[in-house]
Length: 222
Length: 222
DNA sequence: AATTTTTGAAATTTCGATATTTTATAGGAT
DNA sequence: ATCCTATAAAATATCGAAATTTCAAAAATT
Image (cartoon, rainbow over all chains, first blue to last red; front, side, top):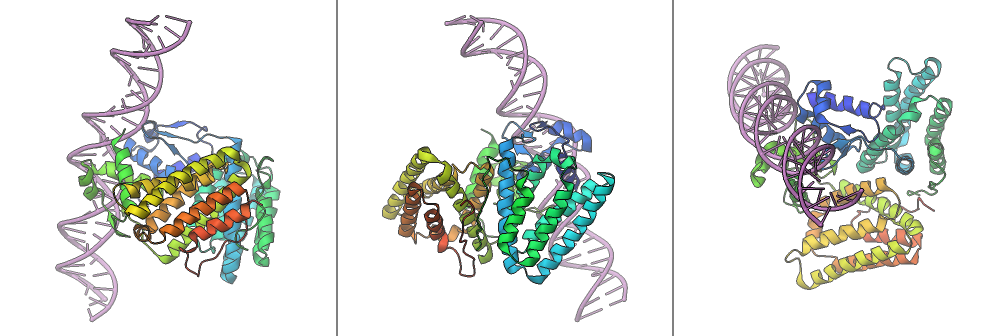
């Protein structure tokens, strides 16, 4: 495994767990000390992370952690609603039993971790496990959409969402609601009702939208 | 201006004008000779282009021009329809006269170039001018959507669309239809009718979808 | 004959140093 | 005092070479 691979993974984690302040400069010369490598190796990693939107790159003025704003949070949340609704509805239409089975499995894993979190809190490597399982659930949701591009765009938006919702995620508020919402989404998938699915996805994100934000009402795939 | 900046722009052009075969390997060591720079400078540029999806990067196995497939073309086209419809409808809702004016201006430029193309063919720097004007028109269309993320995603998809539709674009077939479609989109914008806008955008792309492809029917913003 | 292992060339990644550009500060002019 | 200019320090971009990994062809094994 390449050095860059590990650094990439670790920096991605740090960028989505609040280790850097919003807007903070990310200097290759500084970060290299954390990994014992050359500054140009870090530079390359940062360039790759900026492809995901986790790092902002500007010519001749280096790299930064993106800054936070409420508008941005709304924007990213709306985009997630749009992409996941679209992807989930397409999946319902063409996914079949295989997709339902995979989604059920992903939900089972996630659900198991979420209930342990309820009991034990954010101890050990639960945050990491939860993080992986939550991503997998949402990715599985749209995985039968038949659109590679949609899946890619979703991953980018998902990462940005994680990055901008760091604070709220750390607090364990809404855990119970969250668990129920994931269950509701799974149920909608099994029911095959696309309109229900859209509602359930909207409800999952609703509380992260401020009220100036628009609500997506209709579907793209009928 | 940095060296990388120019190389970036030039390689972007080459990647969207058919200079490389689909799936062709892009070797830094080879490309560096075209620009008289070090291989690592090219590497950096390719990394940045892969952020746009114009280059595929795989760890330890370098860079490639993406391959072509009909499914991919459909996928990318559908995604453009989705993002542009959504963006244009949001723009209608919150753009106002200012947006309409900017769109009219962008259309005027594009229209002027398109009619010159009809007369003179793809001579001089007409392809470059058309390319710029067409992008600007479509970007203006969604520019009042209020969503930075949507605009960014759209740019990525737009670039990929250009890359995968190289052949058809070179041929000047459908020029007349294209001109009319842009006009129709402008009219829909001015009319303020979001459903009309969706239809017009769909019609603009319809002929680039094979019939296995799904048609987006409903709107996300009411 | 088919499969696995070795091996060397080619390609990719990493490095540390140098060149260029930006940013901050101080000095000088209006 | 405000604005412009020069200069030094810091940060970024570029380089070419060295280290590592992949790829494919030849050799060895089953």
